[in-house]
Image (cartoon, rainbow, N blue to C red):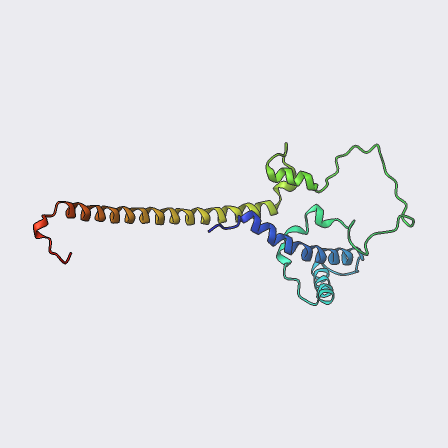
Length: 190
């Protein structure tokens, strides 16, 4: 019986959870961008939970995951948040091309794939993020339980092999006993 790998299980679980966490994060970022006077982080979070509940007719069940990721650069971004984008005609911005300071940006899709495959030349800060640590711990735990399971299967197969050898030896001994049996002592019923 083949078990799906823990990587596959985690990907499926994250694939199902990610849109819900992203939606909640967007609601939170919109509320945060509105600069409610006198609101604490808890007030913002509670308001976001209420809006999420009203919009999706259900509770937000992944608050622990959101708390882990909310401080990551990708999750702080308001570029893709609905209602938070400004029209380019109303905002005048200037770009300083002489600024050569390194800006911190989230890791891209291709770089993340390469880092996951171990092909990255240098490890980026996001490859050492808490998500990677959580996944690694989960994978290690699953690997250990799989090794224990595999060990018990090996032991079980070894015992079956020994039982089979014992049965073969018994049959061989019976055959030898029949071969060396005195024909005069054999009854006609046999």
